[in-house]
Amino acid sequence: MSTFIIRRLLQAILVMALMSVIVFFGVNVIGDPVHMLVSPEADQAEIEAAIRRLGLDKPIWEQYLLFVKNAMQGDLGKSFIFGEPALKLIFHHMPATLELAFSALFLAVLIGIPLGLFAGLNPDSPISKGIMAGSIFGFSLPTFWVGLMLILVFSVELGWLPSTGRGETRSVLGFETSLATVDGLKHIILPALNLALLKISLAVRLTRAGVREAMGQDYVKFARAKGLSTNRIIFVHVLKNIMIPVVTVMGLELGSLIGFSVVTEKIFAWPGMGKLLIDAILQLDRPVVVAYLMIIVVFFVLINMIVDILYSILDPRVRLQDQGA
Image 1 (cartoon, rainbow, N blue to C red):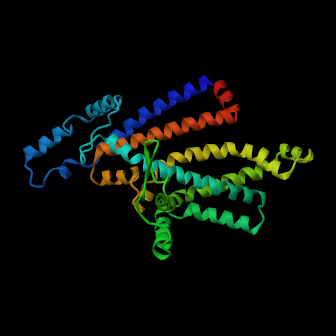
Image 2: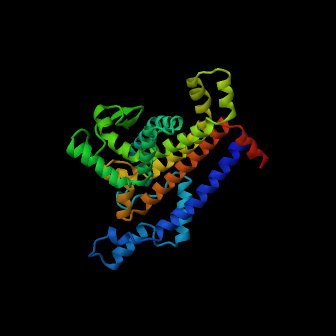
Image 3: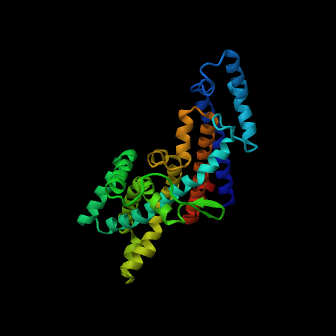
């Protein structure tokens, strides 16, 4: 087990090193932030002074080495626009994004797995066919359109739920969260549902496929022959086996929920990292963009590593195969 974890850690370090190169050079060769930060009436001397102040007068490779040196000390640069450390800005907006992502994942599991289980156990029923048709819509409909429709129906027409903002928050263990207040819960329902729609469809299809495959396996037939009840066969034997791929995929999807919540946050004016990223891109605030992308890389790497470890715990054959390789 320790060999398995060490190998995953080495792979994670290599991935983050490669991504730092791609992210830094990809962001820093696009646009010229100086002309957005200085006055249009500024003379050449003022422009050159701004370039030196931002450290843009150095060659790109030297800027990268300085970035790596500072990153090793926990400094990913200072925002051109706000004049504050980029990490401070990211961490300030991170709780809102994590709150939204985990809420969306919770909805995906809470809704998707029971629906997929029902569809897998009753494949020929009209309800199951309706569930599968709905999952196709979940995959097909664009997030921005669904978000606008949710606002139009539940906020504008019915007036049941607020359309924008995070609502009232409360401090829990030192973190501000909207999940601890009624007003905050009302504000998070629509954006969380919008973000979770694709993942609900994925959970439905994964669970249904797993159940259909498991119900034909020998261990299920043997359990029936022993006289075990249907509920025990389903909830003890079948669910235990289908949870391996479901946990793996849904765990990996958490990274995408965090990284790609940008559209949802923009539509619902959710004050998370995604909205901060959009504002930084529009203003060519390079340090904030680089810091955001590197944080997302770290999230993806850590989540992948945790999922690998959980997978190896659920299925010991994985780490045995890894040792053999």
